[in-house]
Amino acid sequence: MPITYRQEIYRKLIHLSSTWMAAAMYFLPSGGAALLFLLLAAANVLVEYGYYKQWPVIHPLYQLCFGQMLRNSHGEGKFELSGGPYVPAAAFLTVLCFKPQVAVCAFTVMLFGDTAAALIGRKFGRTKFASGKSLEGVLAFIAASAVVLIVCGGIFTYPPSLYLKGAIGIVLAAAAELYEQKLHIDDNFSIPLLVGAAMSLPWPQ
Image (cartoon, rainbow, N blue to C red):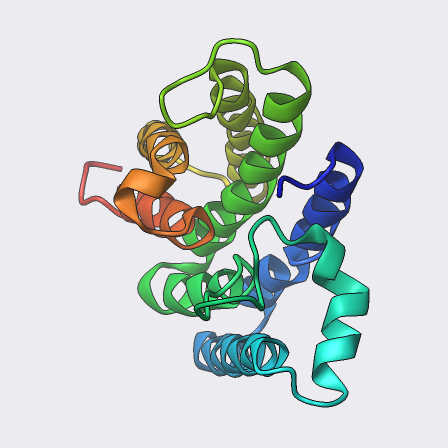
């Protein structure tokens, strides 16, 4: 059963609360940040499994806090992860694989781009793709991600080539977000890795 638009807003506010992870990528040593994200991902999986198995305490608390915001029948039938654990899992790989100034941008693109795509797409989406997502949502993703790229570029003093590589990564990430169901890869996971990989290509600086 689809969630309401108000519930979608709540979901995305929780999504944006992960912005602290981007700060941790920059201010913490990469090894320490990676360990923190790995433990957080494992804890997320454990909690969601506990919800699925209806463990005492975990099930009612999870249902109270997040039950009304789940898009699928999480906790019923076959065990399936929500998008939550993929966020720290992506943070773990992003901070290990990319330089801090790239990792911060790639991860923040996922947070703000995905949020813009969901909220604008649901509210104003009229031109639909076969995936069910909208052109308006895709454009919102690209616009929000471009703002993130520009802000990060100003903070970290990106060379022009890094802006270009970031723009390519954003387009690739928008495609991954659009065709998430066909790719069978959660966009919380694929977006920062695609953006980070594009920005790390060995092009002239």
